[in-house]
Image (cartoon, helix red, strand yellow):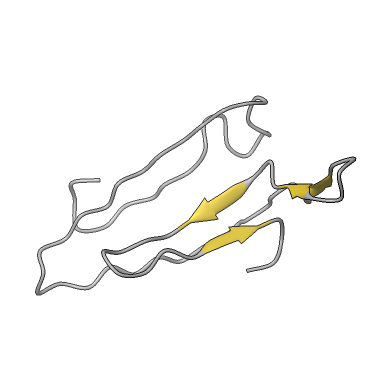
Length: 77
């Protein structure tokens, strides 16, 4: 994103996106500016249990800075 404001959405929104689709958006701002993210419509698939007792998160969102890297799986934001 290279403009001061904008909208980010998945391909084919509002229809579901294809399986195994990987989308990346990089938002950069000068160090003296803040970035504000506002999620207006947010729908992620639930975690999937594996046979070994662990789980796999097919959909996730990661928001990161140089020092922070939280990930949110399923609808737990």
